[in-house]
Image (cartoon, rainbow, N blue to C red; front, side, top):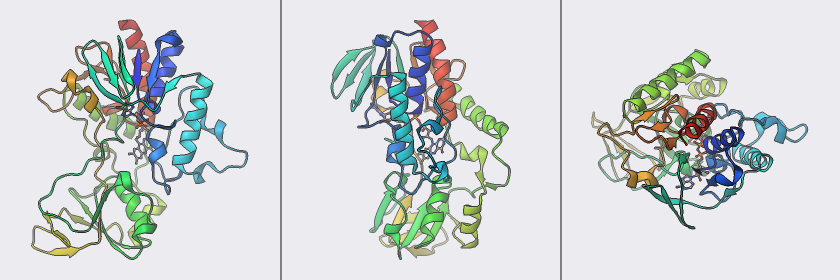
Length: 344
Ligand SMILES: Cc1cc2nc3c(=O)[nH]c(=O)nc-3n(C[C@H](O)[C@H](O)[C@H](O)COP(=O)(O)OP(=O)(O)OC[C@H]3O[C@@H](n4cnc5c(N)ncnc54)[C@H](O)[C@@H]3O)c2cc1C
């Protein structure tokens, strides 16, 4: 059994597989990163545990366990604290994660080809997340200034005094605007008007968002955006950003120009930087030889929590679609272990 990826999803699956009796020496976890932590080790330095959405504990060990006495959990940097937690988790669970090992491709059988040689696997749990696949939409024209994606964002300081265009309607975009607008002139564009909400993010709201994404992947469609269902929850930081005018949003521009962008009404604006907070796609290129995508553009998923690729009981994707959150990854890990061990 090969688990590809040691983020929240891969670790959860490994935990539940062992808990349900899989022999330790039949489990191999491969991870492309140098260190434990999944994508969290790459998050920007200004993202703290008080500015993330909310990170759920891994199954069987509380995050609290890795805090130093007196350490304020909300003030610690996500990119430092969560990798520390994952490292301790791997140690306590006794996982032998092989890293850095990047899976280049998986072919029928299964043969798993890595940058460290090939191996065969009866069953695969793919848990490769999205961080390796930043998405930037195409627009006509060429911008002469600097462009970067959320993946490359390191905090606001480098933008001091500049004119920054932030593109995208998700939580990352709003977080960037909040930080950058305190040191620079920002402009915000989104495809559709952002939907801020005072509604608390209740379990029901979460379940509705997950159900919508689950319905899509069961129908073979690409997973789509969770924010379109949940909206952007107001908090004091966003209120302050709004009061500064940082959340005044413009519709999308029609084209890029060498100095900035042009809108459909002909108005042009100049910028030094364009920051694309336009999200990520699932990192599944290494599964291309299996030809999983159907005519709907997505992968048709089945099983209790829609983690199994339809028609392939020994291939599960977690952290994909409805399980692309820390809580979703936890639940999916449990479901995958039960279904895979039954199939084997
Ligand atoms: C900016 C940002 C903020 C977020 N904040 C939250 C939040 O607050 N709460 C929340 O629940 N969710 C949040 N999410 C979603 C979050 O990413 C997931 O919830 C969760 O952390 C993803 O876990 P994962 O295991 O699926 O993927 P990852 O953490 O990305 O782990 C995937 C692992 O697979 C490895 N890998 C990738 N490709 C290969 C390959 N080909 N071969 C071998 N290894 C490979 C990677 O190196 C990585 O270690 C956020 C996402 C982003 C982008």
